[in-house]
Length: 201
Ligand code: GAR
Image 1 (cartoon, rainbow, N blue to C red):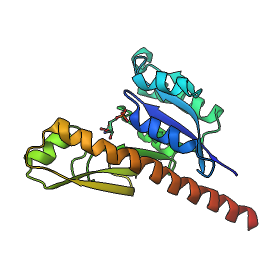
Image 2: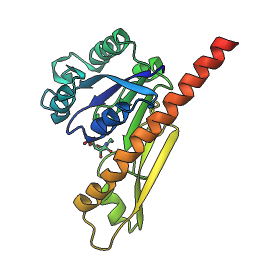
Image 3: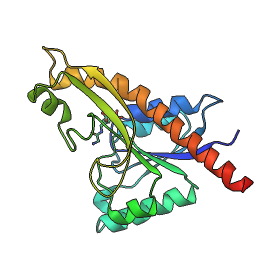
């Protein structure tokens, strides 16, 4: 079975990355996890990926002259691994229009809110303070505006009267770990089908 070569970009814990990794171990899953890249040397997710024999790369953004130099290196690593889809999973760097244009339609992100609500940070606190009764997560394509690209999939949970930002984020994470592998499966299948169509035309 042809599998879409995938990279996951992380900055921390890496639980979404692990959910993707586990999904890719299924024979029928249409994507393979080829590389995990972190902009933080201390990201816990790096060790987890290595334990599963996944190639990891650290590109410490602090050691680059500017954002463009960092992204040029990121682009080189992705291209040399022949990556077809990039999944940002808790990757806390904004990607510039240059990078977004080069990888147009190939970069996914997971965001802890029901977009278009609560773009940016502190989404759980903002949902509680707004008196919302429903919260959720969104897997979306990245475009040149923050958290604004086309939505692939959303999952929601109820906000309980005694929820804190912490309890809400913990309950939402369970949904995130279902959402990202499902969204990647959908996009990878679409890519496989479009390549088959191109071949037969
Ligand atoms: C996840 O909750 C993800 O939705 C959030 O960071 C966490 C990463 O956790 N992403 C953002 O806030 C992006 N703006 P993880 O490293 O354990 O997957």
